[in-house]
Length: 137
Image 1 (cartoon, rainbow, N blue to C red):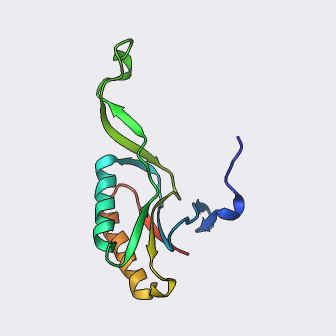
Image 2: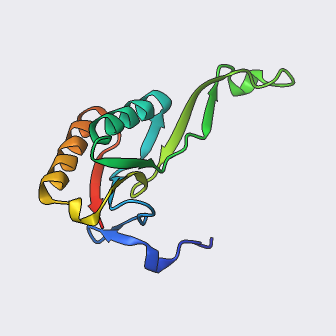
């Protein structure tokens, strides 16, 4: 199978994982392990980030929920339709960027703000099913 990722755009993390490159921000929040992310968990994470960071910076989301869970099971669907969508999911792979944080100026990025963002990620790791980490450009 061919890989369409350019090798010079990937960043190594801990010598064995690759993480996606930053596109818009200076700090990225990426997943350390894989798993499923539900719609309500995603909305809670997004609300938490935007509430804590809206004064100092802009938050960009890199995840789109794309897998539907329907009320009807697979065996019942023969000719009767799929049924209404029950909940949205997203399969998260290790190293996938979830959020990016962009400050107004690069000079505004100080050690205090970096520690503050790492503290927010630590608090989020307590509740989320996926372990997160920060990547600083």
